[in-house]
Image 1: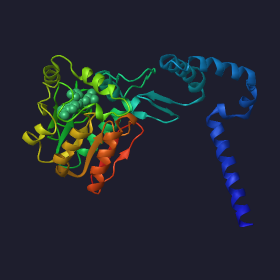
Image 2 (image 1 turned 90 degrees about the vertical axis):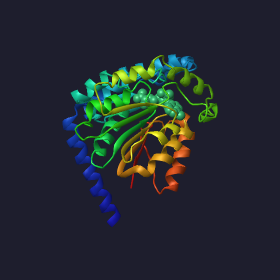
Image 3 (image 1 turned 45 degrees about the vertical axis):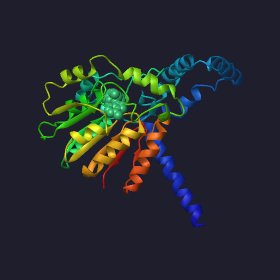
Image 4 (image 1 turned 135 degrees about the vertical axis):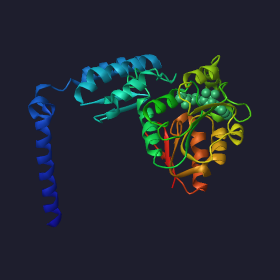
Amino acid sequence: MLERAKRGVLNLARRVGYEILKQSDPRLSAANFREMPEPPASALDRALDTLRDYAGDEHAAARIFDAVLNAAVAPQHHSLFWGDRLLTLDKSAAFRDDPHFAAAMRGVNSDTGATQYASPDGISWRLNTLVWAARAALHVPGDFVECGVYKGDMSWVITELVDLAGAQRSFYLYDTFEGFSPKYSSEDDFPLAPQFFHSADRGYNVPRLYNSVCERFAGKSYVKVIKGIVPDIVSEISPDRIAFMHIDMNSAAPEVGALELLFERVSLGGMVIFDDYGWFLHKKQKDAEDRFMAEHGQEILELPTGQGLLIKR
Ligand SMILES: C[S@@+](CC[C@H](N)C(=O)[O-])C[C@H]1O[C@@H](n2cnc3c(N)ncnc32)[C@H](O)[C@@H]1O
């Protein structure tokens, strides 16, 4: 009896909620649903047959996916985020509306080299995580660190949107600026795709990379661009106290090596972001970092962006 009454109240609440929602969204009205007849099963089957014909080619499959997303899915939703292999429907992703964020985004390249999809929102959600963490890190003592800098895009966005100079924080940027170090990294980092090690390494070897990153940050004197192999170079030059650490070397051994040297210097409440933590191809990094954190009584949160987030406790 009590159960039936509870169910009745719940159903009533659902109906009232739905009626309210309908008033704000004409697409939910029953009349609209009736206007559009279901497509005949044979038409759907024919469409699916056509899709299957192209499914073997990843570029053709991606084009079909994007076309369906734009033509049939997007019009049914209030908002769509699509970029960096992350798709969300009806979420705010409100950072996109911030003109300062949009301006900073224009200064970086969102092409991760790993997307055949349209990816209109690029890596903006990853960047938003970094900016949020960097702002939060200003509330605890310490400097900022990035291991794995490449052209400096992510650190650039942080410096554009977070007032590190005003907070008197230095930003230490570590990279070989010549790709992976054979001392710490190899094909074995990527058992699912050993060729990724070579293609990524070729991509990292950009002529004059160190010089161009120094030039890029020349007007920001609190940024220290440091050329060397992590973790070795960290033993020579590094801050005593850390509020924010971004780890993005795409390889387990140097990433854990950096943690072994620096994690104890991260302030309580300090932020550690792992760029590749949740990506399938980078499982070795995730496993090694989870082990390290378990030994230190900590736990990393996997984000839908592929990043890992840790707030030191
Ligand atoms: C994915 S990229 C970093 C991307 C960068 N965070 C950005 O904002 O675009 C990885 C970088 O890690 C660097 N790297 C890899 N192993 C390293 C090591 N042991 N020591 C220093 N840098 C390393 C590579 O040279 C490469 O530039």
